[in-house]
Image (cartoon, rainbow, N blue to C red; front, side):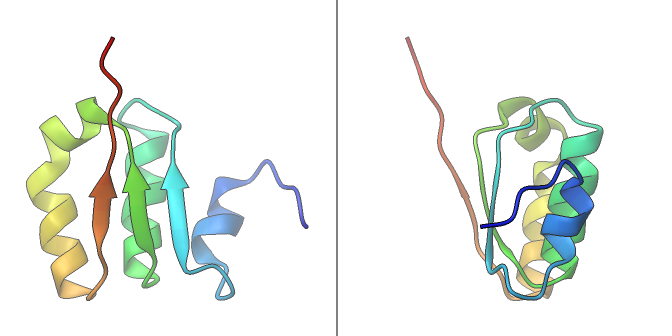
Length: 76
């Protein structure tokens, strides 16, 4: 197992197929998700604010790169 504090190492690593994003927000999370998609990685996210503001871009890019985007959310 490898540990890193650099999210870009993860989303560009050819040995990683699926990225689970739990960063939150719309800045670093957006960059990580979009870069991961561009590198052919499937995405699982619980980031509701990002999906609300950038959802069309996420799903369009995922379709173009033939990857899946799945999401999970918690409700209390």
